[in-house]
Amino acid sequence: MNRIKTIRTRLQQAFSPTHLEVLDESHQHIGHAGSQGGAGHYAIVITATCFAGLSRVEIHRKIYAVLADLIPHEIHALRISSSLSKHTPPPPRVNSNQVKGK
Image (cartoon, rainbow, N blue to C red; front, top):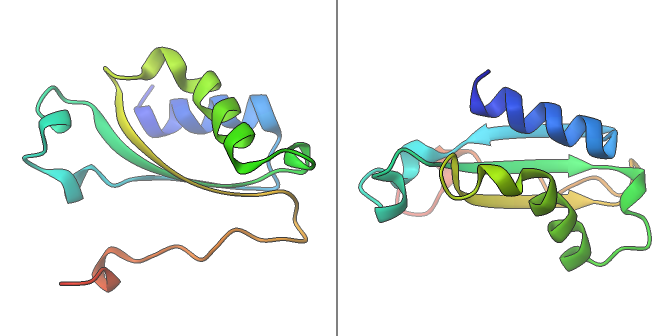
């Protein structure tokens, strides 16, 4: 199973999100020390009602706990955008072509 599918499956099973995107951003970090061993850089955009009442730190801890055994050998870095419910959508994705300096 590829990494994105593994990450997606675990997050779906753990949180039953109403919205989930898993993006491989490893190409933006070529030459970075963490990428030399083959570990990837990923972005997660997730909306789940089970996050209601939790702080951003608590949400991130829960996500990291679900993926803990993949860090650091499969996952070097995560960028997480989360929201509590379908009523508060996550921030819009940033297209890599829109990043400053490109």
